[in-house]
Length: 93
Figure 1 (cartoon, rainbow, N blue to C red):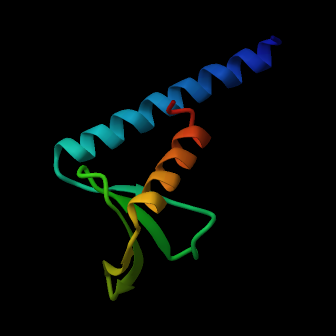
Figure 2: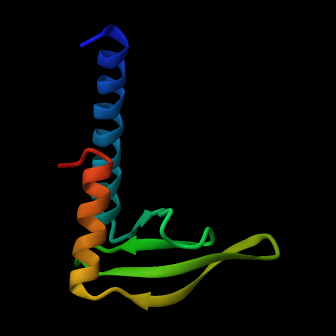
């Protein structure tokens, strides 16, 4: 492994560890974890909750405030597929 490959691998590990900590911290505080996806329109995101369900929500602004609009809840199979895809993509496995 070259030096640059070692540096990139180290940065990926740091990113994965930070993402894991943030996800767990949100769940401990009963907050959802936002998953941004290239598979959804730019104003939408997946919101993963501690109980395992995932919702698609749209984020928009109302004057100076940010609000969300519920789109739908994913089925258990869809939620697991999304979770596994992003865990793998972000080195969380």
